[in-house]
Image (cartoon, rainbow, N blue to C red):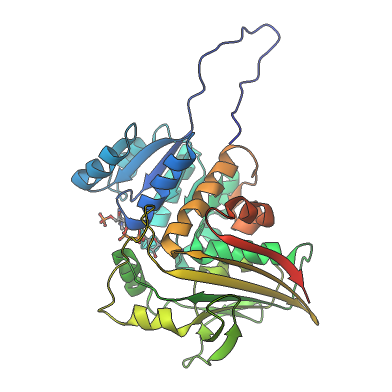
Length: 359
Ligand SMILES: NC(=O)c1ccc[n+]([C@@H]2O[C@H](COP(=O)([O-])OP(=O)(O)OC[C@H]3O[C@@H](n4cnc5c(N)ncnc54)[C@H](OP(=O)(O)O)[C@@H]3O)[C@@H](O)[C@H]2O)c1
């Protein structure tokens, strides 16, 4: 990250006082995904950490693991408490889901404080509401509101942006996701329950209810996952991509193994298998943008969809804070950032990115 230097007038005296690092407030700081976000902020360095949550004991336990971090207890539904909790923050990263509940409360607070807002929502309705309700207020406040800056919603959108390159419109975009398994966290389970019945697909240029019976198809994924039976999957990618690409049809497909895991109430939560706390889960996201007979493709693969969310949202926060992303308003990742450059920055440490190929 580049250091911001104060502008000196000809008469001012240079000072050697160190610049204070920008403070990143993490909401829901003792959650599973937040742990990866805090770890990634620490690993990169150059940030102050502000931990926000509603349970003082759990917040303290996390603060002890991050020396120098400040912990502030707040009920998100109490605007004054939330404003006090965010005082001094340069950006807020909301990791507390279901986001249908938390996003409006935290975005309102971010706009009152005039600081950028990012979250890791996968819920279509919450992400759509963030775009539709907060575009104008965010522009007026001069800050970016970036929902779904995560595996679902963010990675597929960045890959679509990288694949399409200079095309401003396309006939169809397909985001094909393959996971070897999905061990869901408590937050994923709760979000799935609160999100039931609110799903949409993007067809003919608008959001419509999904078909009652999904039609399976087959997708050839690169690498070990190979050919997989896939079905349409309703996630935030349809929403983020539709915000900035003129395209009538956006399909998100997923293979069957993770859906079987998710449907089974006995599937356990993820367990760490490496020093970074990642589970053994592997993923491939393969995005194809079609215009007429031409196709452009970009692919990413890696380990653990919760863990990879951290470098995605932290890279986004860093690029907003250091001035590489300057748009105000409610913005999709690939609309705010140079998508290919963003993904290259995460390769090879956090994922493997195969940039656009044409056929
Ligand atoms: N888009 C993606 O790819 C992606 C990736 C990762 C995670 N996610 C989403 O992120 C969310 C969190 O997932 P997770 O795995 O980190 O779950 P988790 O481990 O259960 O953590 C959830 C956190 O949110 C807090 N929280 C929930 N509701 C709250 C409320 N109303 N007020 C204050 N705090 C609240 C929880 O605190 P309490 O325990 O006090 O409730 C906890 O700290 C889920 O919605 C999940 O779908 C999405």
